[in-house]
Length: 122
Length: 184
Figure 1 (tube, rainbow over the protein chains, first blue to last red):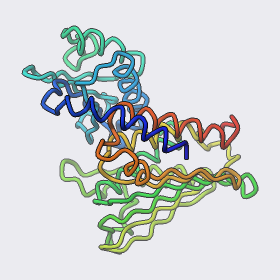
Figure 2: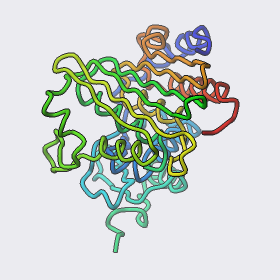
Figure 3: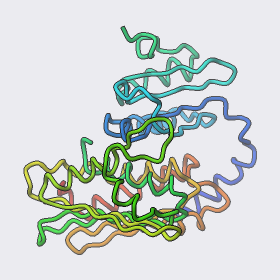
Figure 4: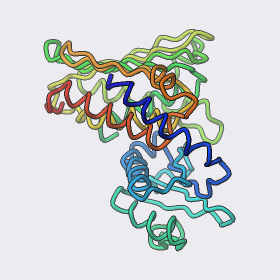
């Protein structure tokens, strides 16, 4: 395995910052459907791209989580975005290319990307 | 499933759902045997003999929201269509082992895909359970044990952003090194 010493250095650096940051600062949750249907439709690269994009932008009050089958397998990969005190937004037929726009427009600027949402499905 | 590695995530998730505290995922690539083998071993709740028999039927599932479960049937289908096979052994209260093999040079075998990504996703999405991953590429071995990582970073969680980034880099670089850029 890669050097654990390197990992411990990261830990020591992070531990002070984490002390100042508590869970109640989490104001946005991104939930990716990761049941068999989601995975088969390509949910994993979508989830990994969200993680990358959040890291690139240094957005630390946002979490990425998974859920099971959301129930509309034909619309997978599906992603639900929960912004504190706002109604849930469900994105459908997601792909890694769409992720940057969702993060920029919705997570950062607070405007859901209408054309990717489930309500936009004809 | 587009890639074999997609099956890894899907099947390992069954172990998590079974309450496993340690889920092992072993990937073996052997050009000598012309086989790719996946072994999933967990210490979850296990299954009854009856359940083991019916679990490869698409209409068997433990979830209550609907009546289909396709994870194991899809794995079995992929194994069988590449000249491989799948077997399940399980004991209630002890755990479950799922073994699947695929014909390495079979024309219908899906690409291996992003194993590092699959493993990383499992850790990231299930930061409170432990995983033991091994990758055996023609006898060259890579082992990743989240228990060691957990100990090194305690009390921070494994899905903390910087730690997760380290895990991802580690998995990617070690696996790349293992197969020397040969993508199977």
